[in-house]
Amino acid sequence: MALSENDRAKLDRLGIENVKLKLAYAGPGPQSAVPGLGPGLDMTRGDIEEWLAEQSHKASKQQDDILWWAKAATWVAVGGIVVAIAIAGLERIFR
Image (tube, rainbow, N blue to C red; front, side):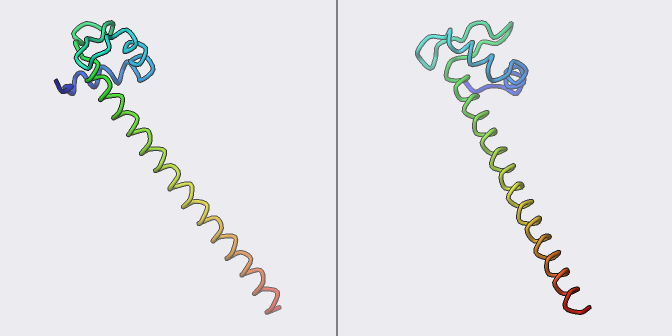
């Protein structure tokens, strides 16, 4: 059974660590019920594991995006330093 948007919102409110703790009390199979998620949350281990995998993928993507921007900022800074050195060198030459 796929999770509804409402189920996903409730899991988001609980947070990854709390959901992992609740998952520890579920049975071993993918169709095992996960107890303790709250009223109206009848989800299976498979549903929760799928949601956790999605959250892990989102976190990985966010980390990759942050790394890309950090690299871009580094190259911009290095470019600024090179330009500053070039201007200082040209200023010395033309004095």
